[in-house]
Image 1 (tube, rainbow, N blue to C red):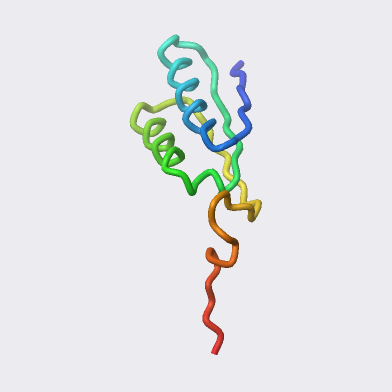
Image 2 (image 1 turned 135 degrees about the vertical axis):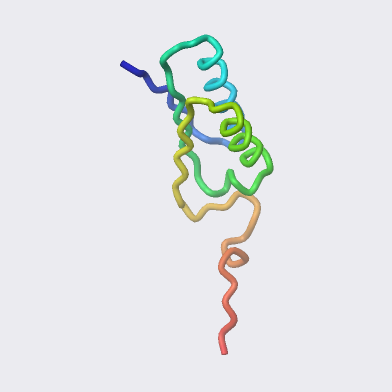
Length: 85
């Protein structure tokens, strides 16, 4: 039976999740990593690097993205710019 390693996201943990998944794959362990993060984490380049790393190396990782409306470095108003006429 597979086991899951749960990592909570604080910006750089996406890379840690991808790295842990790659380590599990190289050790031929039947494990999967699950990383739970909000959209604030995706405003950093590290998130995209982690997605690319995990995809290219076929790592056993699940990235669980939830929309919590708390972007880390961008005002919420800038995400949803609507021109009212």
